[in-house]
Image (tube, rainbow, N blue to C red; front, side, top):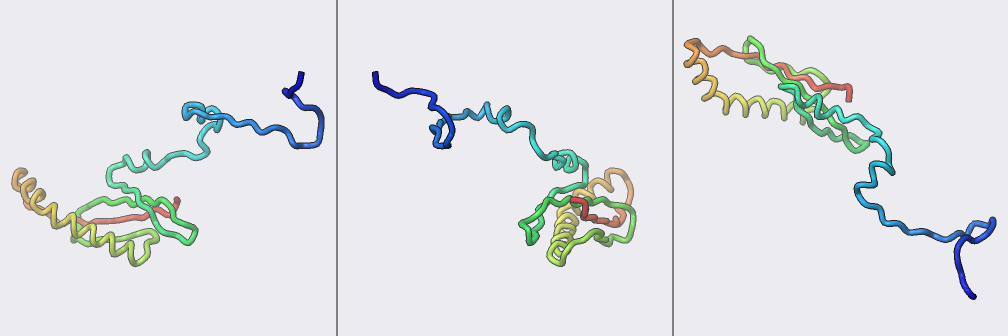
Length: 129
């Protein structure tokens, strides 16, 4: 009989198209291991380190900003390469923290029986993204 079937013979291109439905659980085996290392969670789990996104002409990049405090005059020092808008954001964030932390710091100092001291706030934006 007639028909059609199967394997078609030699050269010339024009083979049959096969459609296959792929389940989500098959994808890791088909695609292989991830091609990048996810260090975001490792670096962001360190106290004082925040993850942000920065605009670039190529679309953007992930950036890490580290903040700590130490005894000082209460000033903010920014290191790393930050543009004007990002520097303004740093100062706005520090102001917010100072305003909202005042109550907690005063209560903690009183509970410890000591005077609250001014703290210096160094902020560093990592360039090694």
